[in-house]
Image (cartoon, rainbow, N blue to C red; front, side):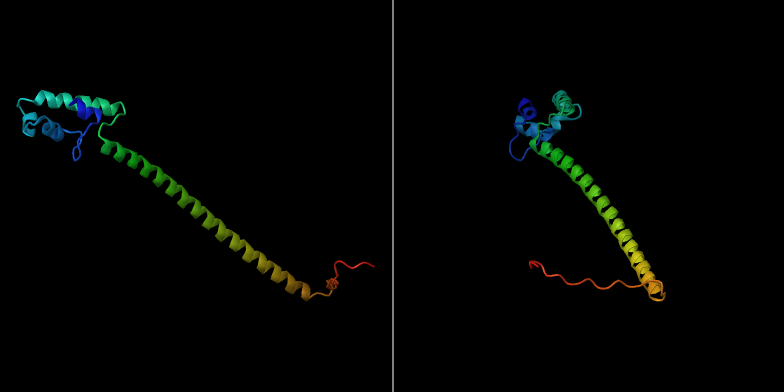
Length: 135
């Protein structure tokens, strides 16, 4: 019992009554009902529960499972945040495109309006300048 609770578990075993019975070379049914080793099963379960409540998991596979569950939870949270950010960026993109389209329409309307009035005169095109010549 002490070896199992310390985490010294043989390959293929776990920290449970079945492995305890196998290690003790006793039939597993002897740990249940009104049989001879019921008090040992109760002590084993109590000690195992105390270890688990203290945060110590003697079974390396169980510890790995707990670690992977915690990692999965963190990854799910990251994924949810990423999906939320993607949704927000997609909404921003849609709004930006809508605003650009509205501004383009406004510019086109103003150009048409300006072309039809005589009060607005067009500026001459800028002269081409040559860089690097001295006068």
